[in-house]
Length: 272
Image (cartoon, rainbow, N blue to C red; front, side, top):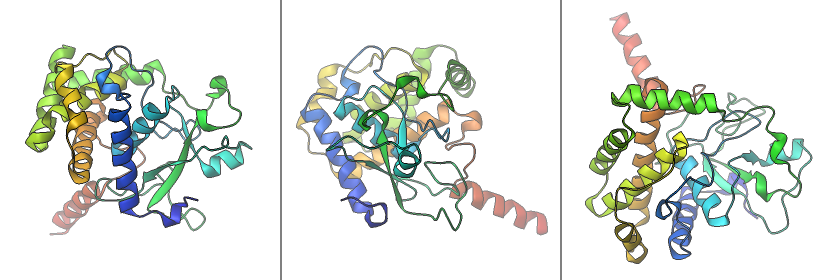
């Protein structure tokens, strides 16, 4: 049985790669399907945490592979506290506190709360989609929900950060940034994935500007695990920058190593 404390980086990377492979082999990859995305970005309805980075994408991969329409994910502890149980044969999905593709933050990536003695840091946390539970109700979103206001705020930020209100241009700018950051052999996939994720984030119909046959060609290309994860990282990073306040890359209650280092440098300059 998978346990949080036993998960290693290699395990997370393999699960991520395996889910991607299943999506393309089973023809379930959402970036190959035009129309309204079947679900929004992954979030935790109890804590209000909206999953970001590679964590968000691995949960999207799992949801697409399993056919989940619900975007809500809960930790094992939250499930226990609510008196819920996973359905027989259902397994959790790991998300990262820290690894090569997930910058460390000072809060629990599931609860959004600061780490403490009772809530120590782990490298990985296990979460379940709401649809994996034995009994749940879609109307239980009372504590937190990604409302229309949140989506409108993201659209405003995308317009502000891109300097245009033309969605085609916004999408084009995102794709340009992403493809410049990934290896040449990954550019088509990165562009398609970035367009899909932006449509999902802003709740608008998805229509890729890339011919479907070009995206489908990745079914027959053996992709290195490192290339896939690096591509996923850049797709999510640039997408999050585009729709976030002040181009922030994380939940507002968190701080990245980069921000910490910058603050420390500023403090040193002030002392000098």
